[in-house]
Image (cartoon, rainbow, N blue to C red):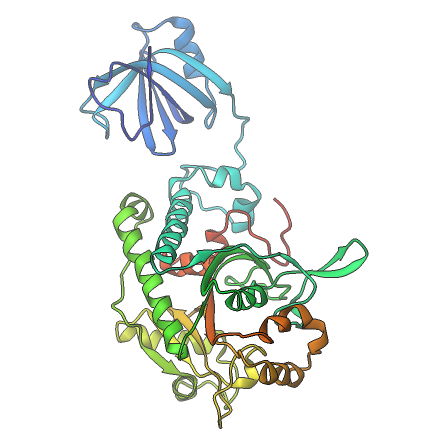
Length: 434
């Protein structure tokens, strides 16, 4: 009986094996033909001497179209002409599905395709080893987040994605008709994870989708994204949250270096792991850096994409890819962020990676009276948030947390040119399919 093998573990002495995959290339030289068969782990050569295999088998194999899905059974032979050091002499083939021609997108062709063409044919795009490697690394990163969170005492939770009110309100909410009632797709699990701080779970995290109806058609914005959110109780200061984020990100980066060597090689990438703790800049310091570089910003202004890039260049020149920007103006932050007493600033921060924000967080306002005052200050009606505010009436500990964009994290980690490269089926202003 033939052994089932993938291209990553075929070796001389295996005898008769069966390999499943896609036909990457067929070369017919008359007296001998070759098929390059590709699976998830790489490629293997199928060698077909015309005089040594059945004519019908030879004919069926040599007429296969590229990207057809097949199973080939044959004997493994040593070969000094192949990268694996082995080849397979076929004895039978099962053709599961012949690919139509021409292909909508090349898999190994050197011709670059436009992003829209790639996304419209994502099933084919993902057959490229370098594209697939991104998502294998992404999967590893999520596994590592779970491991790191558990090691630090966090409980995994799942919160609703159809909600009655937004965590931040405003025009970035997607409305939903919920059996005749107005509802929304969740911008984040913010309100729910804060409520859980009152429940005694102390430390919770979630990896799940979030939705923002932002009219931004850039290489860093999408309307549906995956967020790694965490919240922790009994903190003394926002730095406690920043320290925890550093631990978690460091664990992910070191784990990817250890486990993702093959995928990183396929991408031609190397992950540089910064030393802890990550540097902390204040908003005021960053504003000065941006203004000195020529940006016409004034106190309270958003640093913006250009400002973040300038700061990123400055920090990279000092060897810091990851760094925090803290003490943002209170006016720019949501109602649940705690104000810094006697100032116009707040106990909030962003984590930036190579000049782009990948995380926002801070210390939350846990005092009921102050929280409702902040809601009113932001133009929100506390009566619309009764389910949330009830958790603050009966003993809410001091707490803080964060949200990290998983898509952006992978994008910056691998120096991808567009966040859509890190999302299987992205959603943006113009894309609702596939």
